[in-house]
Length: 180
Image 1: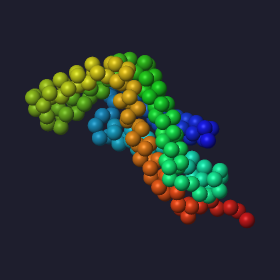
Image 2: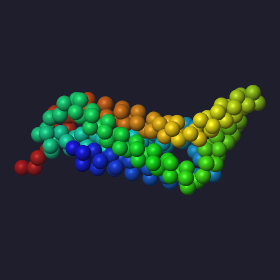
Image 3: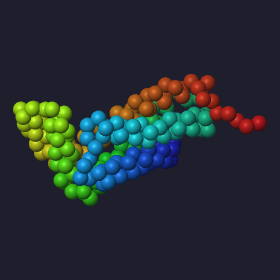
Image 4: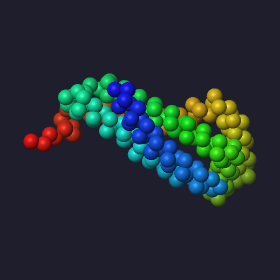
């Protein structure tokens, strides 16, 4: 089972990490912020974490004879999500090391500009700037930054694990078709 967790966790982690690395390096000077950036990021996480579904189905069909209980399936999904999350965190740290600490500043400036373009007033922009300065100071601490980064992907993994375990505990849902 450890091999299954590592294999599918690394698959999910590599998929999401490639997207993260490419977006962060290709758009270094103009990172996608706001709804578009979030949509791209979370859609990629969802696609990458579909490996959880595949792994649970594989475990059910090939290792357990076509039946799996909810909690073992959910646990498998959580473990795979944790491996993917750790790889995601390591990739983000590599992005910060390559792009430098100014990458966070660039993202913050882009968000302020996005709010300005959306019609935010001077008072709102000043409040946003103050909030961003506090975040930057907090984010400089790796003991805070690492869990924040992990918390971006892990809840998606929990959700995919929950749905996958709930669906695949039913042996009639997508049964393995054996060729005669």
